[in-house]
Image 1 (cartoon, rainbow, N blue to C red):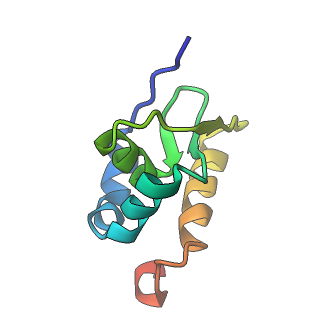
Image 2 (spheres, rainbow, N blue to C red; image 1 turned 180 degrees about the horizontal axis):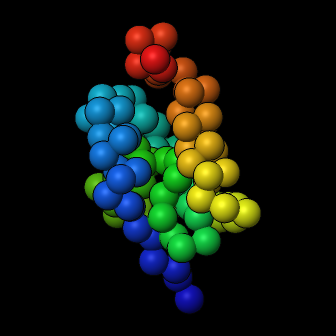
Amino acid sequence: MSKSIGVSTTTFERAKKVIELASPKLKESIKKDGQWTPITINQDGVILDGHHRYRICNELSITPKTITKTFQNKLLEEKFVIESNLLRRHLNDKKRN
């Protein structure tokens, strides 16, 4: 049985600027080699990390690979989302601040 994956409005809005800048190279890579890195979702199926990969997989009609992370509280979940994105290569110092 497949689990439904969703995107919370708040999380999506925070990631929207980054999503708009998604590299065509990522799409080419997923199309050619498949999805290498799983999309991180919470126990409710909300995407925490991997919005680009999710969108691209849907565009390419590929079932996305996911990993579920469970957190003790929403604060720790939010911390994970922030830290995951701060460590991304595509965020320069201006976007981090």
